[in-house]
Image 1 (cartoon, one colour):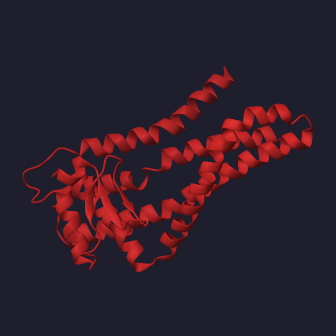
Image 2: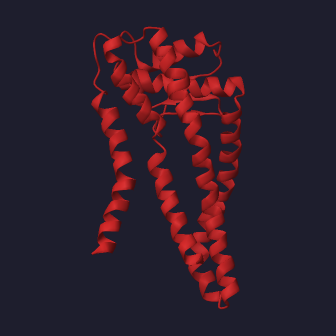
Image 3: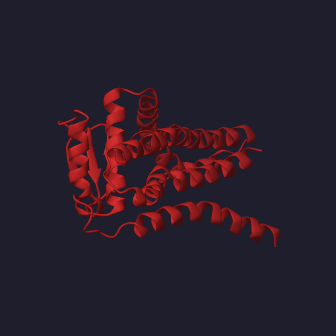
Length: 226
């Protein structure tokens, strides 16, 4: 009974943030005639305003994100072509990442370095977890088994570090940059600002669910090591 309760609590911790993010973005995702431009047009305007004319704004089927390698803002079709509060807030959020990059901000540089390293460790993790069952058979000594588990923990820990570095970058993009720009520029009405804040919070916490899953996997490996 206790195990079932703990399992349900764990499931809630993982699922609820993801559900809240999707619900918030959908809640404010309807197009409105009083919004003068699309998310793509706002992103282009803001990039030009911040002297970043060489940063393109492109549609993407991989979700809304800023690509530091291509130095491009990628927006989903709903955001790129939409005239909703979600489109406005998300576009401003992603442009803020381009501003962070252009300014060479320390937190963004730290995240970028860890993200590049994580790309290597993720590939290694994929190979490792496929080979792990076979390696476990070969690891007949306790020390070999401990070493095997330690590798799993190490690979997962890199992803946790990336997540920890991502959160302050995301929060700054939403509340340190996008929110002041939208407020001072009067891109949305004062009555809509609470909704915009909710969308910006959702945009900043998009990675939270994935981070929690990674932490659960890490805890499982650490428990095996004990």
